[in-house]
Structures are given as C-alpha cells and as structure tokens.
Amino acid sequence: AQSVAQPEDQVNVAEGNPLTVKCTYSVSGNPYLFWYVQYPNRGLQFLLKYITGDNLVKGSYGFEAEFNKSQTSFHLKKPSALVSDSALYFCAVRDGNQAGTALIFGKGTTLSVSS
Amino acid sequence: GAVVSQHPSRVICKSGTSVKIECRSLDFQATTMFWYRQFPKKSLMLMATSNEGSKATYEQGVEKDKFLINHASLTLSTLTVTSAHPEDSSFYICSATPGRVSNQPQHFGDGTRLSIL
Image 1 (cartoon, each protein chain N blue to C red):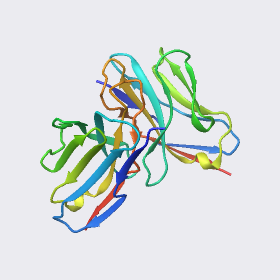
Image 2 (cartoon, rainbow over the protein chains, first blue to last red):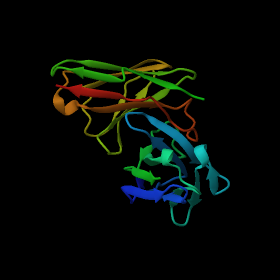
Image 3 (cartoon, chains in turn cyan, brown):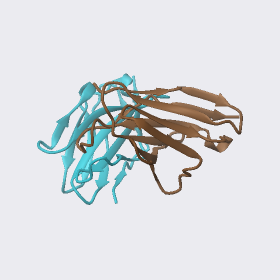
Image 4 (cartoon, one colour):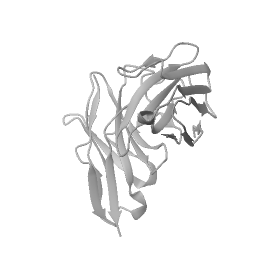
C-alpha cells in the first residue's frame, strides 16, 4: 500500500526567508512523487514531480524539492518565500509500476508567509 | 498545458435533490478520471476511479448507488450525487491524466462546492 505523511499541519515563515515543507512516503514499487498547491476554493495546481534522474527537481514559482531515497523523503523548498506563496500544499505519490492509478495524497500543510 | 474543466463550481440545493457534476478534459483524452472529496482543511479522499466505457471502481466505504459515475467519452466524466443530504455537503474535485502513463501528473478541475440545505 502507498502512503504519504506530511508531519506539519502548518508552517510559518517570514517573507524573504527560506521555506521547507516536509513529506515522507511509503510505496512498494518505484516512487513517483508530486507536489501540488491549492488556493481557497480552487482545485490543485501541479508544482513539480520526481520520476527519475537528478534528486533535486525544480518546478513552478521558484519551488524545488529533493528526493532522498534512504530517508524516503521529498521535501518541498524555496530559497526566499513570498506572501503570495501562502496556501495549502499537498505531497502525493504513485507507484510507478502501476499505470493508471490515482495519486495518494498527504493530509496537506498550510504555509503561511508573513510580511 | 493540460486543462480540466469542472462544472458547476457551486451548488446549493434542498435535501433529497440529485446533483450532477461534470468533469471535462479540454485538450487531451483521458482514459481515466478520478473523483475526490475534500473536507474543510483536510486532504483529498479518493472516491472512485472512472474508466471510459466501463464501470467505475469505488474506494472502500464509498456508496456506488449514492455517487453515480459515468465516463461516456474520453473527455467527459460525470458524478451524480443522488438524493443528496446535508452530510453530502463537501468540496468535490475531479482530475485526469493524459493517457495511462504513470509518470504524468494528474490535472485537476477547480472543484465543486456542494451545499445541501
């Protein structure tokens, strides 16, 4: 079975400071990992994904994430946070050996960036 | 980029009413679409996987007679909440992936806020 853990319900950072949103995963096959962002009353927007290759992946809006196989983690990072980054962030995983299956999501982390 | 359109965005109706929600992939064909339910400040709960031309696969605990799913074409899936009651009030989100390639992200509609009075 696949699962995703986002240990923090909320992350608070000051504008201009670096931010990290944590994610760990469990999957029996190849982990395909994704980050999404959700603004109030909206669907989810895709930020970035890790499938294979370089462990550091870069995505939209200056976000990046680092895949760590030994720690089964895929933390989302940004060097300098913006107030507009405040939103709900979801980490998701899919077993790469199972095509056509749905992503499994973590419970989400609310990011609050203060000015 | 891939776009998924979901309608309506908001529905308010009386208890006992049936409500249909549409999910369309606008610029790609989606063999498979997914329906999620999201409670306030909570994660997305997968309700069912909708397969074009065949019956949907429901997750454990989801009533298939309550939440009817039809995927009649490669670009349209519908979710009908039958005889809705206040406990069905929620945010429903659909998503789709181009083809059946597992390394592609799912693209999401903007969701439907369902409020049953």
